[in-house]
Length: 120
View 1 (cartoon, rainbow, N blue to C red):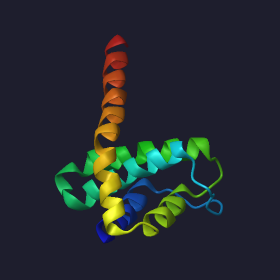
View 2: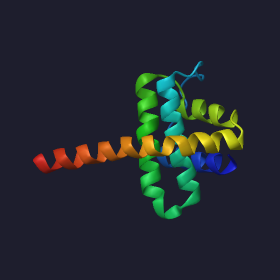
View 3: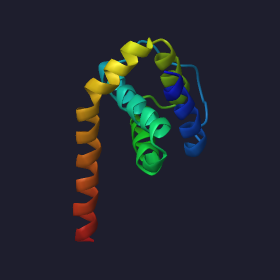
View 4: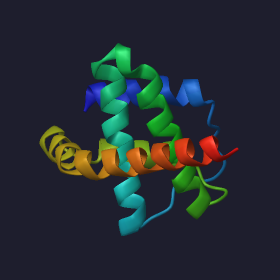
């Protein structure tokens, strides 16, 4: 979890996300899925510097989804509080279970961008 939190700090600086309001609770199932993907990309950022651009893009995407559903709230702070509330084992398990879903989501987005970019 320390790696995830360190990577999140770096990712937050890179994304220049600012705090706006107190965290919200409870966390919806949809938000939880985005937080799991955010944890995966934060972990990747800390684990493999060669994947930094990909990991930051994944983090920005999922923070954006969270902010879109919860305007006016600090999603980085909300994620940080959620992640700190997880044990290392629980967070690692969530990341591993979420990996295929997160990869499929970002892959689908990339394919759509390529397809529509080719049409322009």
